Length: 284
Length: 351
Image (cartoon, rainbow over all chains, first blue to last red):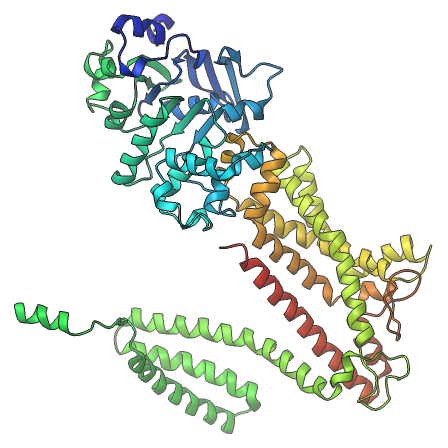
């Protein structure tokens, strides 16, 4: 298969012009977001991702879909250099955040990760901290001084859709919350350091439908001023929350992007037959 | 139908535990216990097995047989289940005997040595074979506290840092360090004492500091190994989240990993402390013994509880031996209190 086929690049400016712009696209022109060029990933000798070039426009939600084991989560971790903690991992290609290469030699990795927040599959609040301390943990960890901690705390919890539920028990341990609340606490925690990009690795896979709905609402609200990349196995979820979709697939070899486009296009008139089969639930 | 539901609404519903039937399980236990008891008494009376231990041994054997026969009235599975339950319980009871026996003996024999002044006097005007009710072990208690405190100050930070190197830094030498720490835990305590004697005592003098160094050598591997296991239990997810929040490795380790493992690390430290609190051999060669209450940890010998016991035991007269037992009782209580403190401190981390 030729590279040109598999690397349909989603370009915000172009699609915006082509569709004549809609509510979601407002204010997006001219911003940078996140771009990847020719990402390859290896674990030891195992080639797991091949030549992924995607463009995540600023202030949009991009869903990464595809069957298990095709490298979506690995790709997500490449975007904030969490990938390099895995022993034996290697990569090629470039990732640009606001036009800056994050794997460049002069990049301060921890400063970069402040701009690219992450929410994990399993809710994982810090067990040694209270709810309030959890939200503000990023500031403490990165030694950021903030004038008004209380208002930041309220702002983050409100944006994560958790404020009403926890405002009277901020001094309790984060582990005392339910699974869905814990996940929204983790989102609030990621928001407190004001990232430009939020990566979410199957954020709802451990949650019940009601909590899932809340997290999805949160995602849509956050995308107003944040670039969000979300890995999901749930087609409906991808359709509900994302503006753009990239379909990953591995046919035994390394994972590749079969198709990437506006979500509406991916779900209604995909250009590749395999995408059509997958989004309609015929395999995977 | 409607009647039944109204009555259940009218009657207050009480919480019950229908799966617990105490009177039945007691009844089930009484008969085999009585039969096994009778058989055991018969064996003790009519055979060579005699005394409490003989009775215990024959009782356990008889109980196993009786519970097997009792179970066979139902089926083989039930019989085997009963025999296994008996074996496990008997194993626990047998392991419990020496523990209870040591505690009992120590406190019974040591009781007459202990009076209020025991904790406030030293042995500077009293000799080991003077009457009980004179002198005390305040000097040994304080000496032990000082030596253990200094040993902890040395060994706990180094032990935890060693564990951090193995689990968090994962440096190239992690494997080697782990092997060295493991083999260090096999160092005989007298060797540690001899080493400190050669390096410290022979150049300066017997001292509390020398004792603390010897004990810290013995304490370090226990603290390091246990801390390593505790740190491994901290989920990698937490480390990942911290890194994803822009934390450096140092911030992650000190602000996330260590607080999460706090109670486990306290346990690790207390295990290390309990390991060395009763060590005698290295102290003979390092801190030695002094009969005088003193807070000076350098330049002169310093007393400790194990050495107090050893000194009184060496004197060998009746009152001296009772003093030794009294010292043993204090030492045991001392370690017990350490464990309770560790428990409380460890529990504090959960809110």
